[in-house]
Amino acid sequence: GWFSFVTGARAKRARIDSFFKPKTPKKAGPVTFALPKRKNPVSTNLEKEATVDDDGVVRVELPKNRVGLWFLDLDPKPSGLACVALERFDLYNKVEEQTAAFHAYVEAMPAGRVALISI
Image (cartoon, rainbow, N blue to C red; front, side, top):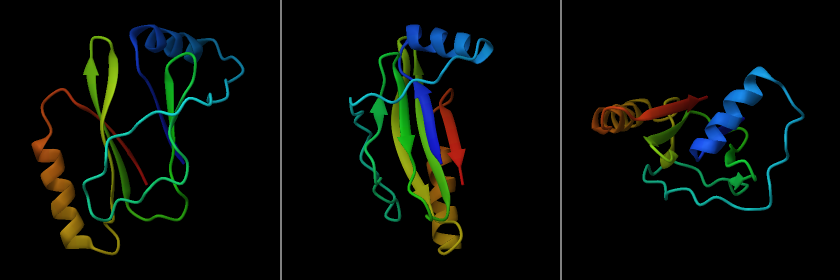
């Protein structure tokens, strides 16, 4: 699986337009995108670095066969979405510990944040 989000107002508009007018998807460029350091102890390092293309679309490829919830915390700023955190919460093997960690993270999020969650 993967996450994809845009980083600027121009990129956001282009992404919305491309939704309604499908085009051939661009390949992620060779430019890497720095993600925040993970804080949850079970979060897994990514196998591939996140990339950003010429339109400002960031692509984060998630490692295969890692159980739990992948959680991407985005801050909507006037200039576009800023990535605040990318965490994995292992709700399958460490149920109580990781459920508490996930709950604490969500409770501490400021109002207006965007969360993308994937399994």
